[in-house]
Length: 252
Image (cartoon, rainbow, N blue to C red; front, side, top):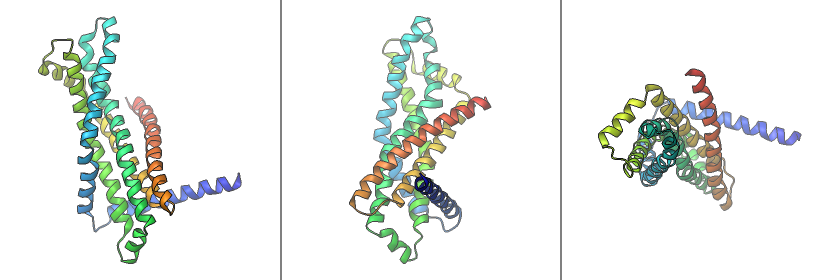
């Protein structure tokens, strides 16, 4: 038991050191803008097909499943307002984070782990390049910036899916639907979505980079790092979702 506690404390100390190193390198010049832009492209643009399909399906299915409950009370006219609040406030950031955890998290974990296995990180240190600034900071900054951007996109695609689900049974114009949607959305809903997306983006980037950077040597380390990056990112996202819900309920 004592050895397990000691290993846990050492792990927490290493996470703290990794966090402090990232914060120091992220704010101090020189800044790796080209690498940040490249990572934004890898994280954002290459995720659009999967994000688009997932966001559309979530909006369409959620609307279809919500209709029977509202029909019992004769309140189907409230369907656009319901799906707008649900998608913008909760579903869009959570779905985006989960998809990014699987795609982006595994990619970052595998990349850094393979560089660690092939000793490229050690070679960068020998050549005078700071691996924390070039490899870690750029990826965490890119995920923190791109996940909110993808979140807004998923919200739009999800609302489009909801509109098509409604028009399959009701005669509702595009203008009337989005008029009800924007009337139902408040500033606090946008704030809740952005807060979730920023926190989730930072968590995915940090957890994946940490797992990949400190992966074990050998060929098995790459697979374990990719798997651990996905599992740890998703686990932390759910924990943070619970905490953010409690925090927003206290504020509102």
